[in-house]
Length: 64
Image 1 (cartoon, one colour):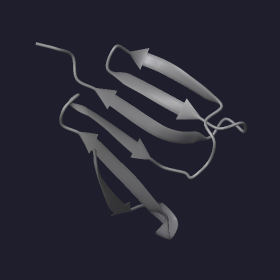
Image 2 (tube, helix red, strand yellow):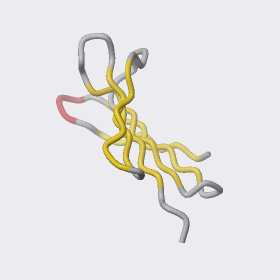
Image 3 (cartoon, one colour):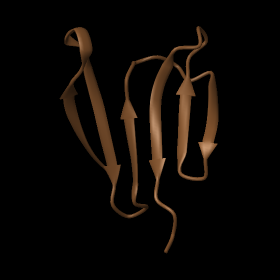
Image 4 (tube, helix red, strand yellow):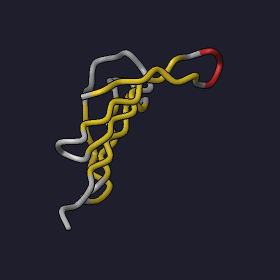
């Protein structure tokens, strides 16, 4: 899995990780523990911390 640091809002750094083997990507917005994951659909999951803040977004590609 390859990771890239991206400039975010307010000087924060986001981390984008891409796994070409599984054709998945994860955008980490905060360096916090994940308390809950909500599946938006079969391709998108959103992770939240204890305070309800978004920690990261997982994007999965459906098999063709």
